[in-house]
Length: 104
Picture 1 (cartoon, helix red, strand yellow):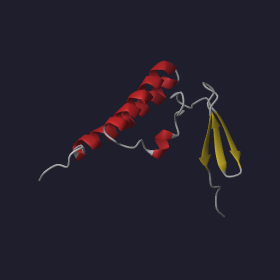
Picture 2 (tube, one colour):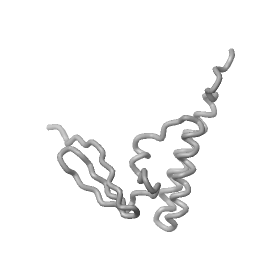
Picture 3 (spheres, rainbow, N blue to C red):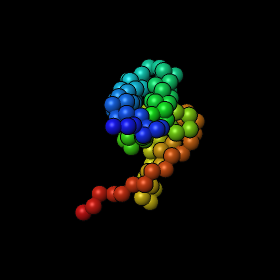
Picture 4 (cartoon, one colour):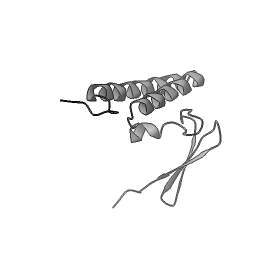
C-alpha cells in the first residue's frame, strides 16, 4: 500500500508522542533545580510536535508558559467568572483558560 506524500508513518507519530510525554516528565523533575534545563526540554518537546505534526496533549500544554516556555510550577492562579487565569512569574504573561465549576 502506498504512503501518502507528506504524512509520516503511524509508528513515527507514536514514538513522537512518547518522546513528548517523556520530555515533559523530565521537565517537571528538572524545573525544581534547573529552570534552563526544564525550558530546553519543553522547547525540544514542542519542536518534536511541530516536526511530526503531533499535538501536545491538553494537560501538558497547561503546564508551561506559551510565551517564555518555562514550567508553571511557581505561578499565580486565580478563578474569575468561569476563567482560570494563570500568571507566569518569569515573564509576567497571563494565560486564560475556560473553567467550569462543579455541577450540583
